[in-house]
Image (tube, rainbow, N blue to C red; front, side, top):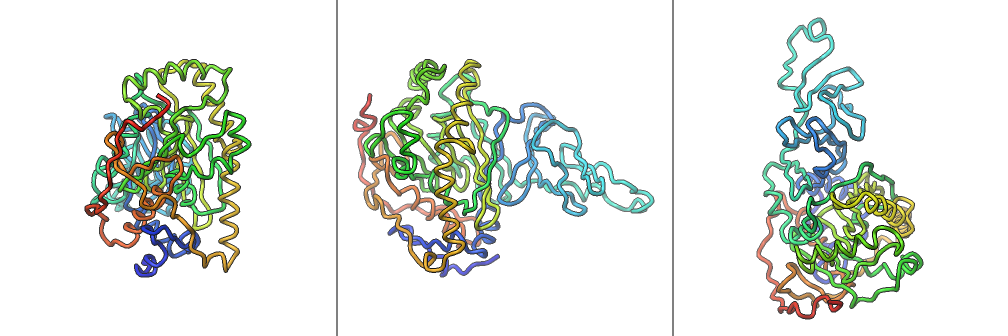
Length: 437
């Protein structure tokens, strides 16, 4: 699918912060995204803790395509299109589990955990022994790699390595993965629900929109503690399209549960290991559709299902060596706040769904240019925190950076390598960071 580059450039003015909502509803743009964006980006698949043993598998999606992630006998990980080579049926309909083989329930073609076709019914009397099994294995995802236990896949064999793709985001991932002995683990079970809107509305919110929180989440946030202001945090935007916001103080969800004492000790140990960044991750997006609120035990993927529909897959993340009572409390807290019916999450779903409905049904509303001007020209470099640093919890540098990278993917015929950034930003000294210390 090809969309005219001039048309795309007319819709996205990331530098000045003016973006047309057509990018959220246009069917041709969506089809182009599947090829040029999701077909070339590193996409989150699973965490090591979800498939710890040989032949463990997890079923997910890359863009709109079903994918099967499987732990191999040698400890490595492979991923395959979850699509039979005969008629395109899923070869695995389970969400996760452990299996040595996967049989398509349409005609019975069977594949092993390494993706090889190992059995075909009636091979002798229907195919006369002429079907070449070695030519009909599952289609393997071109690249699979992991960073600190987070497993990603890429359809594009020419895409740069995952480490390069993550760029400066690795510094912040380290802050919420390396802060404790044993690292993190994902608890069993994935919460899934559907929003009738475009996936980018969610991805851009997590890349940097905390501006909505005091308004959209006013009632729920007041139940957890005092309201916060812009000076209670900061934000960073990375040239690779990633971004996140910092909240200088963690807010304990419930002061009388086991999380309170555990989080205090966790905070002390974390600071010793990774410094300020252990305290400061509020929300993030790894371009294009992997996001989370690590401080609230939550990571998620925005799976596109069309220009006006996406699925949210939400995972609960805890410290692997945390006490069981703390894990249970964290799971309860995560579900209560960021689950499908969470008191915070339903606010977001309502916002996204109403915007999606307006754009799907409206006409004049689609002619507007949305305003992403907040903080234009105010970002700085920082001697401790890589990326464009904004000295406020509120800012739209992350969204502008996200759509800059989106436009580069969408208008490039080859993998869009990052050009030298011309921004000459003044340095912000670390002494003014985290005034609570």
